[in-house]
Length: 231
Ligand code: URA
Image (tube, rainbow, N blue to C red):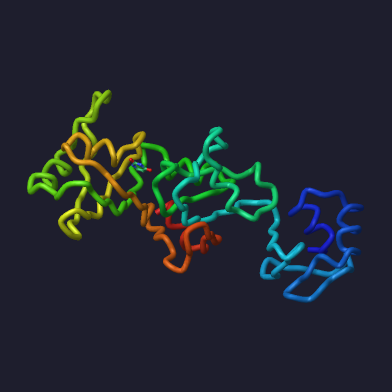
């Protein structure tokens, strides 16, 4: 594809605007400044504008290591949206594929592909989520069985789906749940008389939070990670 056409698709600019952007010398392809619109780029080309990687608007799949203090929605008047952590073009096309509470950290998936995110969030598909949970009080011996049989949450008619708990230490567990009700993990432990004091999502389906991402950092998913959601 021609570079000027690539810019039009990636940035939503007209051909004339793309030509001007190119002239400004702010566009690099594979590290070299390119000013010529007819220059050919491929899917493998690394195109940057003002130092930011740009891609043809098309599906984008992002994993973010969310720090505390950011909401997975538009700003709520108190907290900043986690979108501010992204350095992306065409931000309005993106949405969260499942949310974390403002004080929860860890894996958040962000995309512009509605079918893909539906597969993650739809209760029908029971996508696994793994959380590391820190508790105020020691774990009781009956927790594992209670999670396995299902827990009655306040204001819910149905029991939670069976969940699996792995004890890490006296006050820390890994919990795998297969649904995503509002404040689910906190409410499950509250129903057992305990309190969640720290919550970190490590995994969604087969997508594992990349441990090289510092809080607030993100990266694009690999093709395998994207495809794993359909398996
Ligand atoms: N369960 C919660 O209680 N909070 C989250 O952020 C995610 C799961």
